[in-house]
Image (cartoon, rainbow, N blue to C red; front, side, top):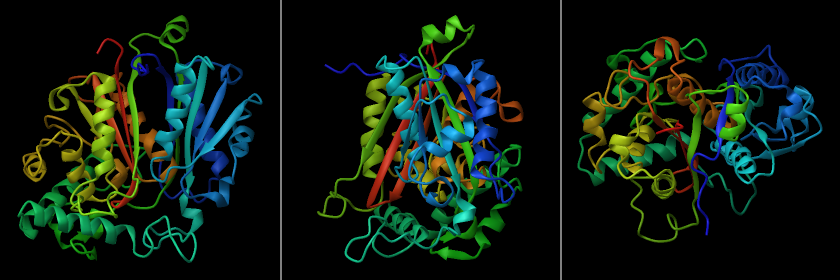
Length: 401
């Protein structure tokens, strides 16, 4: 019977580029930038890496249909490099492949990579990428803001919340993320905003305004993983280990029946339940210290708090307004700026979230560092649209947590 991977894999090193409009840099440049930091952090040679996974969401223009470009850019030692795609959860999918390879004993050291040169594709965040004339896996017709605006309306109707109160909570989320991003030298957007600016911003898809939406960024992030025993033999102490990885994919239930009311993400609830079981977490409200969630839009962050069991259903709006998820709050969320301000190069986001949690757990997050060093942290990715999506939940923590 499967026993899970809790504490069977340790993060040896991580790296992350500065996210932003990196017009002058190629995909290779971004890969080398992130990998150089990770390799130095891990304290190993390239020749010691036994396998690699590359997560890419949309960028076939710069990266192509295989892992060969990564192997060439990093001069990897003729090892297997597997390219994976899972929408915005592609970075988390890459991490899952590397972690499972180490946990299974197939390799001693593995590399997980996420990369996207999204600005070069011309992707604006509004149009969809069509797949054919009969069925479009991205959502038939519509736009990402349009779909997530619908979840905002469904949430508001279900919980009988006024539009004004919901807008105020979303504005609080955006103000918080901008304040956090302003302290992060690698973030794309580093300018604080006010609640008034958030509330008066141009409407993109009612009730979502411009400052409720994340931007389009270039960037890369990566992780080098191994067993705790090997990590210690390499001189590592205070290890960050993987407590759980869970991924859940829509199977049509949301669209093909009347059970889903459109106010939450079903796959996030499924993935969170599985991850908590594997990590042996019975009360996430008290056992999780730090959160990085998929805030492609401010409403997504809000409903995700309930889907993860961090907020009681219907009460996330009040937790947000009470400052629970602020940088100095009870359970900080997006302390690095999140997708909203750090940026969202699709394939890199899952590993970027993990990068911040890793730094915080080791007490290395500089100006953003929590005064009380966290012991358990969660990252959450959401790919696709509310009615057709994939959710990933990754929990990491100190080895003795």
